[in-house]
Structure formats: C-alpha cells, structure tokens
Length: 277
Image (cartoon, rainbow, N blue to C red; front, side, top):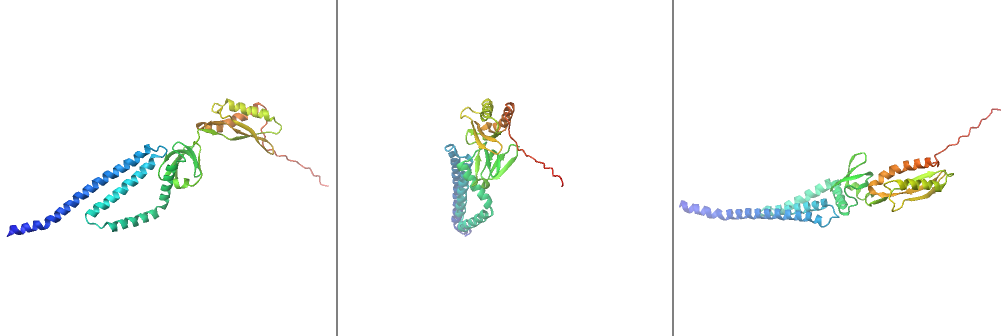
C-alpha cells in the first residue's frame, strides 16, 4: 500500500519537475545563444569601422553597444517568459522608467545626439586646431558627450558637444596650405614701391613662406594718416603661427632700415595766449 502511494506521488510531481527542468534548459539555451548573438552583433558593427575610415570608430563602438544591450534586453525578457513571468508589465515599467530617465537627462541626451552628429560629419578630428564654442585650441579627444581642447597656454578645456554642434566651427587645420592675413601701414610721404620691395624681400627670405602660391601684397586702404598694405603669405598649416608672429617684426625692422616711416597717431596742440585787457 505504501509503495502504491509513493508511486502516485512520483507520478503526480514528475510532469511538473520535467516541465521545470525543460524551462531551465531552454532558458539557459536562450541566454547562451542571445549572448553569442549580442557579441557577434557588437563585433560586426565595430568591424564596419574599417570599411568606412571617414567615420570615427567611436561611433561604431557606440552603436555596437546599443545593439548588444538591446539584444540582451530581449533575451532577458524571453528568459523570464519561460518561467511564466508576465513580461508585459515589465516592458511597460521599463518604458516608463526610460521616459523618466530621458526627461531627467535631457542635457546629457542632447550632448549625445550632438556627439553622434560630430562623429558622422566630422567637421574636425583629433590633432586639428579649431575654434568652437568661443574656445580655440588643439583637439585632443572626441567622445560621445564632450570634445577636449588643449590651448596654447596648456589649458585642458572640456566642451559639451551640444555647445559645439549647431554653432560656427572654424577648423584651422582643414587645408594643408593656409594664407596669413596681415596689414601694414606706411606714411603718405613714402614711396609705395619702396615699401612693397621691403615687404617682398622679407617674405622671400622667410624659410616657411611658400613660393607657390605667391604671397599677395597690395595696397588695401588709404587711411587718414597711412597707406595700408594687405599682406598675405601662404604656408603649410603647422607654420601658420610662426609666420603670424615673426613676419610683423621682420617687416618693421626692414622698413626702419629703409628709412620708411610707419605712421602713428599724432595730436597737434595749439596754445592761445590771451592777454587780459
């Protein structure tokens, strides 16, 4: 009799145990396959960076992470569903939580969106000298949320991408050859040809001024007290600031040696001596 009761108990619980064991095995199988697919999807997205060298690899890593975690989220829901958990309420809860987090992190998400656009269109890259968000410096790092600049006085400036995207960006390193605009004035009584000869000589002797394209030296403006030359030598991008800060001194010395006057503001004072009658 006891053996009969024991066999009934086994027969009663055996189907449930088998179903539970089957769900565990299927859940493990779903989890393993899902993790494998997520890893493959991430690696496949990162591998695309080699096919599109014009785009930053950070962008592919970001999208790869988004795809991987999205797949893992669906895998988690599928695993819970195998154990009879009502996933509809969980999805609704995750959606509400995502909305709340999105509203709380609006600024961060705007930086993220701007970072994606910067990495897609690449108005600048690492090692470029740029002027953005009112700051000027060398780009040392670009990520999804910020751009980091190093200034000439060795400051480390971190700029949120949302402050850069949508505003004017000046990339001083985009072209290999650059023109350096400068203005020099000489007095009206001096010879324009002699002044131009001095400027041409200084530019011709400068080691970083290119012969082609030829420097541009012409009279630009007849000011109140001076004849102003616009001077535009061309150079390779890395020599821009060397020319910008060395040529004015050399031209000043050349004009002095040629006894050509550089005008400066004068003020004439007339004294009137009035005698009391």
